[in-house]
Image 1 (cartoon, rainbow, N blue to C red):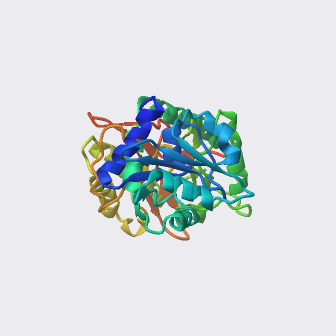
Image 2: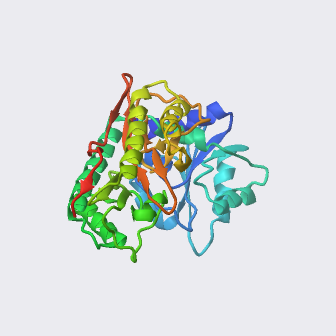
Image 3: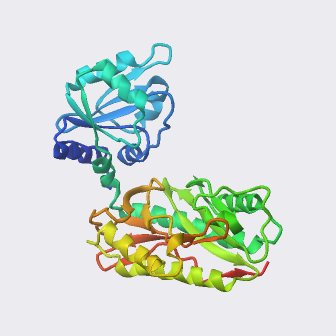
Length: 369
């Protein structure tokens, strides 16, 4: 990422030019934070940064955020509004100043009421979804980005080691979850990347399960933990599945299949590969196994300031992945009312191949607890 605010904003102006629109707009979220470095909250108050293809950017800023906005070092026009007055007039002033007719926005982030406010101010404004193009600027990670991701991952792995060492039969999923969260912060997390998934037994067969306060883990259970720390604005995303006291032959066979799929992902990953090719190879291992009917998910997703961001590692996505891309390699098999297994690593694509940013062991582990 470029060091100067003007250079970073110019990249978004280039996106507008490439799309053939007059400007692109950013709202608080990962793209906004990448542009101005300082994070701002997304709440009921509209907050907008507009970067023209040509000309000087402008911003619509809630009055109570002005002093914080000063820290950004923004030298474009700023239009502020107070709660008591409402924001409609401010949108009119912003758009009158910009003199634009077409605008690209973040389709997955911009909220409907902001979209409507712009159209009230300028009914003939043509708004297009530029999510893919805007977010693509975050796909190639800088050395600083990789350092932040690595810090978040190392914190997560230390927290996982501590948590697994404390697991005992008879604990509830919720108790294990609470221990994991405490360990994340004890190891230096600034925040959680997302609320952890801690699931045992039949709960592990639900890819996005919620920890249960009424389920006590028992011998033979699969215990799946999917979680991550957030550090310096970047998120880790790790999953490990272990077994408690013993693993059945079925559990060992399922685990071996998922592990082979995960390792295949590393084998095929290199700069220039497509998301489709990675998922096709990884999912192909699962499909060739006796457990093909347990496939529920794609291989993974991009990782950075957002836990889920471009690229999405799935069949049909023929996006070419350049060096510097980070994605999650997380194949899994899930049988409802039985158990599930997922193994997730955070992978950096390089010119020579790839590197695993996660280092936590992933051979089959049976906890004697």
